[in-house]
Length: 264
Image (cartoon, rainbow, N blue to C red; front, side, top):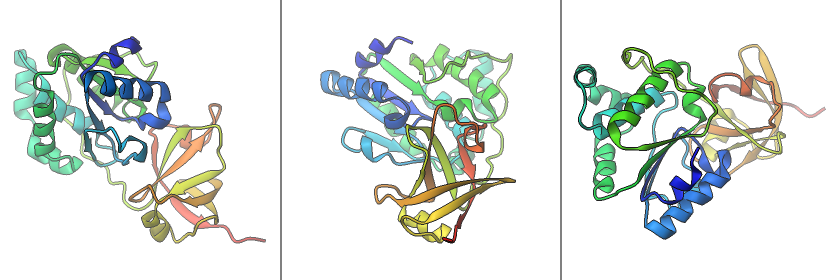
């Protein structure tokens, strides 16, 4: 991965990564590109990252699980000189429906395109959310097509080797992630779950409560910490590199049930 390319970019999109936690080094290179090149920085994620507020040009918030749909929208708005297969694929998609289901408005993509005009070095950084998604095979194919027809430099925050299928598949129906959701990231500490006031109300827990995080037939115990910088009902859960709990299995987002653990 050519990290130097990021610092030389003047248009950067980050999709599927909480970049300040997932790759502090990449985060620093983005800041460098903004300072040196007046780079536009578009952050696309279900979680509004307070650490990016000062230098994020545009924030595109989408629904948990809709990464495949977001990539389809990127193909629609950013690909040029398409071959017949890609033209036919995109013409068969209901872009308006995909946009509505993912909660990422078409006008937001139009704004992204406008911001990209007259930019010469365009880079898209793609994170682990994409590569732990159950639709990773089609997502990988979409990324290969995006690389071929968009002019973006593709940077993966993953060791995955992209395998393109012979034909792009339709975007799958979006699964619902109602209620409380936990999002895992690698951290030196794994004692806490951080949530917003909204999360606290829905989960019926208070700051410093000991809680159990329940997913299917598995349970973890953490201490809940109220984070006023967070919004919505997605909580952050740090895990260590060697973690083997359900938080580190499969897709990074887990629809969980939170219960207060009564003190003995």
